[in-house]
Image (cartoon, rainbow, N blue to C red; front, top):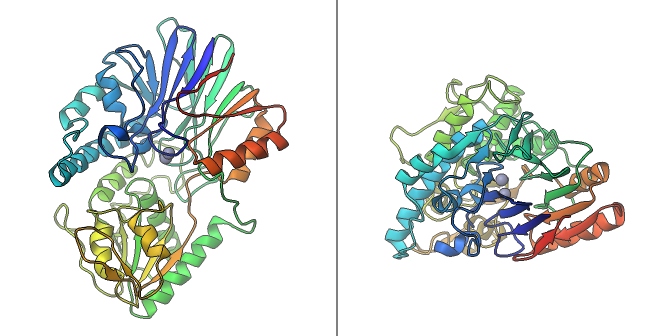
Length: 453
Ligand SMILES: [Zn+2]
Ligand SMILES: [Zn+2]
């Protein structure tokens, strides 16, 4: 019998983790850490899983909402191999070490004794059980050889894969985070077009329709003209960016726009974790399927302005472009620290290019009116938001129209919806039931064991 169960604590994008039981074999799909919950509550619900009872784990990509709890799971499953792509191995190790630093800091600041949930030393130990597998090659998930897996490129970020699992004559595809269109660096997903019985599908963008006239190119040109307008009026531009993925994509996009003469040639200010992650993207520049093959961002003359010392903040001066993490201007990050001064200047522009959680400091900036006071960090006074704010869509997730189209092509017997808030999964279920009546659509809810067959 094949069973599927979500270990997330809610229908949401948080601590993404799923358990797939294939007869005697138990496979864990991802083990994420919830970005907003604190301490042990940020982990997936691992309560009923016995010590050492999972045979293998698959990590779809490095983002912490998929990888951040893997060290905790591996602690209670010391012999469990964790399969992932070669790039994900390197990116995840760097992100987990950074996560330990963040957790240590939180323990000092808040006194939460759950932290750190794991240590730098543990990462060194558990990563010995990580097994890199390239997309396209079939490998065994257990010793008997009855359960196999093949990775397929999923777009999204470097190293992201969808996993095609075969067992007992049945095929199950776990999408992970997915994007079908080419981004500036990462090329779109290459997924199977038939022969899948059960599809486990992310639904991040299920609640919002994309404008039919949208193209990534036109969005880039819109960003370029906003940047040029701000700079020519003596302002500076801040683009809050996630250190891994979005930073590299947007800087390369801006570099393309410079080459086309759409924005002036000048280096972009980056700092902290973004520098490390950009270095890893460079290491894999010729080893993965991507655009700008062979480009080294760190070695491209005049592209980046990096601080002399680790952790050093760039100076706030007019005429600059700050491409700083974090992507939501979270407390104690560079975009937040610089942002508190930055947003007070009416000549400046904050360009939001990705998802902002409604409670995040960036969302507060986006939702404020000009002149309104905004509290970016509880430990500091609120400041007036006088700068301009504009939103741009450079999502690394497939729009819902593309997800539905894929299910229409694939026609699996069953589609299990994951990685989406309630409105997103609700829309997807309703639309799929109308458009693809051949597939049974199930929303994965916590503790619900779904019998696949
Ligand atoms: Zn992701
Ligand atoms: Zn995700």
